[in-house]
Image (cartoon, rainbow, N blue to C red; front, side, top):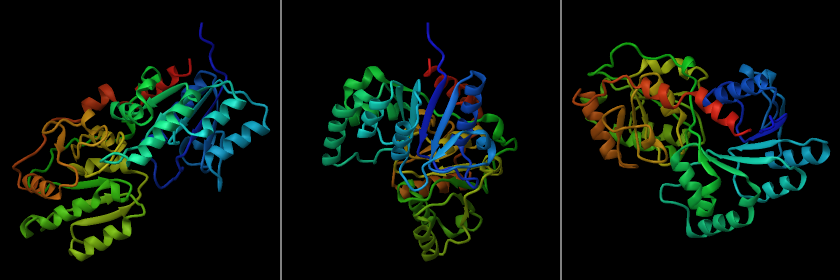
Amino acid sequence: MDVKPKRIAIICNYELLESRVGGMDYFFWAFNEKCIENQIKIDWFFPNKALHGNYKVFNIFPSENKTLETTFISYIKKNQVQYSHIVTHFLELCTSFFSEVKKHQTAKIIGVDHNPRPLNGYPLKKRFKKRLKGILYSKYIDLFVGVSIYTSHAILNDFGSFLKSKTQTIYNGVLMNSIISKTTERSKLKPKFLVVSHLRFSKGIQDLIEAVNLLSEDLKADLKIDVYGDGPYKNRLSELVSAYKLEANLNFKGSQSNVNELYQNYDYLIQPTHMECFSLSVLESLSANIPVITTPVGGNLEVISNNENGFIFETKNFKVLAALLSSIIRGEKGITINTRKLIENRFSIEMMVQKHIELLK
């Protein structure tokens, strides 16, 4: 008979920002609530404290200027606490951190992998190092969880196929009730586009800018693309927009905490990413009945069917993207189905929370 855990630790390298409330925040809130219902106490280890949303009721130990790994090791050394389960999110897997934790804890350690991989794979030297780390440190992790089938396969490819028996997939999910669905018909002649993305090179926003630059002047006349998000590549992207004189077409709106309410105002999400794990913005967009234009990387093909609930174009091929956008703007191509139903059936946050609770048995 399984014994219900009394106390668990969640170590998550995810900055808590009131200006950027996304799918993972909703998951953490729902998971914490479910644990309380099941009389499971949680100690949360995040980079920072927060009071927005449901974080005000969390028991958070912030790392501040230290690494999360250092903070957690220091905590379990100084305090008389034994966890039944220790779960990591967004932490590098198969490192000496896990062996150090096992010196002080008898807990079951679960590593959840959210990390995307490079489009063309890791360099040979890094591949060798990951295999070596898999041999040295994987034995200290009791269960590996990928947030998509792609991610689970990547875990085995990175650290060794011998981990197959203790690797499983739990899809990320979205809180359906928080996302306002589009109920009006999608515009066929003047569609509105949005991007929801962290602004870094690997997200491929520069490819979108190149694609827009290739469009004819008549198509650009009424084209509006709102870009939600922030990041280290923003200045370079702004420079590129300015160089091509596309300020009237691409509008950088920064991070918004209510994007879940804004999807409904658009017709298509564009995600020209070069590397992805399993995109919550894709799930959120589909939940809002907004089709997605994206690339076949990461777990995208596990949720997007070309010409059904979105369009797939070759990664980095901005000429193909330009042609695709041209066809959509001219009304030659379009998505007509309600894209929300797939998410309701397969990718709800309730399903995600329940499967994570089951890991604690």
